[in-house]
Image (cartoon, rainbow, N blue to C red; front, side, top):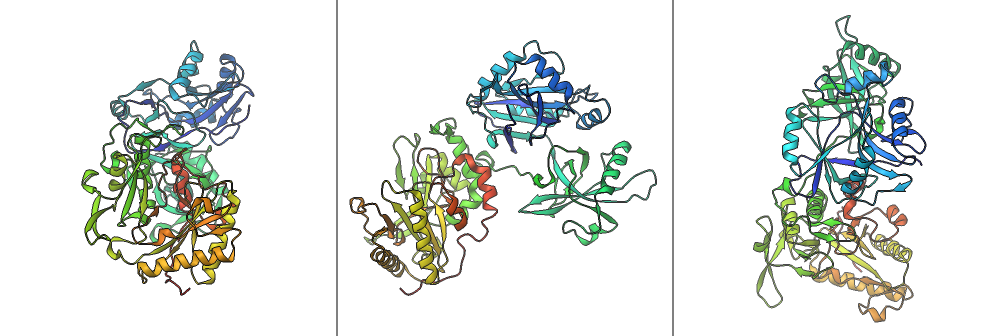
Amino acid sequence: MSYRPPQKATLSDHVPTRCDWLFEYKYDGYRLLLDTGDAVAWTKNGKDWSDRFAGLIEAACAHFPKGCLVDGEAVVLGSDGQPDFGALQRALRKSGGKDILFFAFDLIEEEGKDLTGLTNLERKARLEALMEGAPPPLFYAEHVSGGGEAMLEAVCREGGEGVIAKRAAAPYRHRRTRDWLKVKCSNRQEFVIVGWVESDKKARPFRSLLLGVHEDGALRYAGKVGTGFDHETMVALKKKLERLSRKTPPLEVPRGEAKEARWVSPKLVAEVAFTEFTSAGTLRHPSFLGLRSDKPARQVKRERALPTAAGVGVKVTSAERMVFAQARVTKGQLADYYAAIAPLLLVHAARRPLTLVRCPQGRSKHCFFQKHGADALGDAVHGVPIREKDGGTEDYLWVEDAKGLVQCAQMGTIEFHGWGSRNDALEAPDRLVFDLDPDEGLDFADVKAAAVSVRDILAEMGLDSWPLLTGGKGVHVVAPLDASAKWPAVKSFAERFARALAQDRPDRFTANIRKNKRGGKIFLDWLRNQRGATAVMPYSARAREGAPVAVPVSWPELASANSGHDWHVGDLEKLLRHAEGLTGWGKAKQSLPDL
């Protein structure tokens, strides 16, 4: 048996209230995976800490069958009966770990059998059976079903760290997901130590530590912490700091904060409790809890609670209904996805006429398009009056915030498609979209090569463009416009471009919409570029098997993509991280060229 990354919880600012969740105490210690196959205690980052937790792995191998992988937390209880992280560190330093306990909360493998496909409840039932009669230091982590808010209140009242909420029917996934949520009683997280300030008292090794945290791809200053240390900890920490000393700061620091500072290479990680971040991004009322040697400094990022449907003010009914049965994505999860992804989706979709794909009973049931009727969707879904071909006027749907998106999801919306123009300039499109739709049997490599050809020809004409994985089998090539041209000109350009390319490369492209005329070619769909036509919005989910998502990518990323549906709703955290590297996607000041 070898190391397998554990499932991680996503920070949340509220406790789920639905009945399909179970709740556990959030232990304040070191996450461990006890492997009775190879007799190894793995940290959450794959370090072998069997020497530090020899007592735990010995007890686990004696009690559990060979070939088990047990997930849990190593803790030391303080005098008040609560887990004490500082006491855990002292126990590791002094007593060889004799006071360390292990609370087991999941069973990943049992006698060599992979259990990750089972639900949380099924795995916990197996773990509880294996834990029967287990002697200290092994303990089973109890849970309650429902009543999470009451449990959090009790835990916080007793001085605990918080609770872990787990979706009862979810499998075990080796990554951070929203099927596990952590809800804390107070703010606390890891920070990188970047320096210290000398003390004017001889008995005190230092006055305070200077902290940093990774945010938006850079190490950013997070303030100082000067409380929470005992003398022994300060002496040991000062020796570590001196060994890492350097002359220059490893990050930008406000001038006043850098006064009297001594700098260190950013390698040590401290866990700190605090009340909040100030508007300047520094900590208010911080208190040192201890060093974390189980997490590399490069992985220390500012934790943010992702928005949820409840957090944006929308109550989701029938939240447990499966929208994507195969992918096990519920209506509640899809609504939470739209609440969290809203800042990215709204860059493209806000204040733009929209057409929704609604599937009230799930994606495999009856679905339909809707572009009118804002009043039936919610107060954050609006209508913009648009003149129709017959001379009449109809109100088309539009949103401008996360609440609007989530209200649409509450009413069964899966997909968001948008016009090529915004509400304030309806007759002047701000983008070109070429949809590369391959004939049956064509490889995705053919689609990628075709997209590059379209990009190169547009570039020769002075237009920068970007690829979008559609969540289906194709790719969109998107070129932003400055809205200086009207719909007739944009439509004419798109049609002439597509027909010219099809004529020049008839073996690869066709501009004919009829599928029986494609004959192994890629349809270069130019029809998205006419008044009233829509295209799927970036970061919209798709009503297709697997809960895929339309995702903007760079051209190098397109080259390594496996399909147009590489990403799905369950990749929320990954999508948010990916977007950090896409600054400038789809942004360029450029006008429609002459063709």
